[in-house]
Length: 223
Image (cartoon, one colour):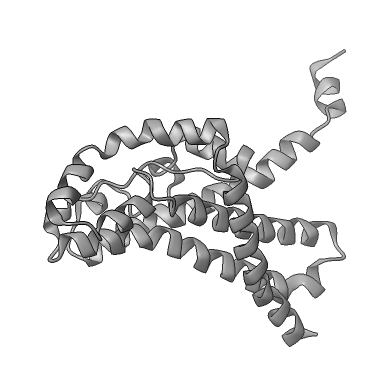
């Protein structure tokens, strides 16, 4: 069989479905990490901005394993944004705000995608291309919620740990931040054992279902 015939007879559905997941995942990760970088920049630290992390280029943000986890298990992570907390006027508070910027941006992104989903549903639903667009919006919204929820877990180096640590006394805060990198081992153990999978799924689904009211409201506006 000729190569051309092999290509024509291939089942492309798996690759197509994979792309439908990879592209939304990249959008979620880029927005998440850009938001960290932008928040740090606005609060006085230009470290990540100088490293090119305030960018729409996915290659500057993706962590291969974290991206794979987001695609396969619907929760994951990106390459951490470098932040020098000593450039902040209020290091603990501003570090927490910078950390929160990522998950907050994911919720905003999800709400925006669902708003478009509701506004466009009537126009696009009955066409093949339109259905693809709607599925892209819905998948992006769900993955964005999942990414935000997962990153709020208070285990280093996830964003939730920086928020939790900011509530601790200064001496303990500095000590925990010094050993932050070892939290990755605990995080990987939790991920691969699935210890928190059910709570993450349930929380993500609850948040997504609540946000879906935005889509329903938008749909009613144009009906």
